[in-house]
Image (cartoon, rainbow, N blue to C red):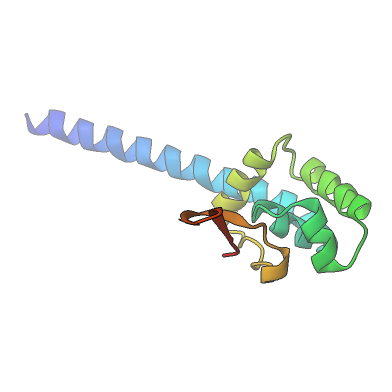
Length: 125
């Protein structure tokens, strides 16, 4: 019985070690990709993973929307992803902070659950 428990403990330890090693290798690959980004690509990436639209990013960084699209495409190519969802997952795994929140004037109005006599009330969060 003790031999069997020892074998199971060793097997579990080896599995945990393999999983941890795989995680470290993936982290290293993501960090390597992040290091390939220019400072501007990294800046745009932070806004993209924060859920900002190209137009909002352009206004915040005071650059053309087309320029944002170019930086965004370059960053996604260097990060070796084809979707924003994959980009967000990689950045979350690497601990990359999402973009700072945008000024209130750049946020989209949302429908409030409250209504007045004329219909739904729009509120800017």
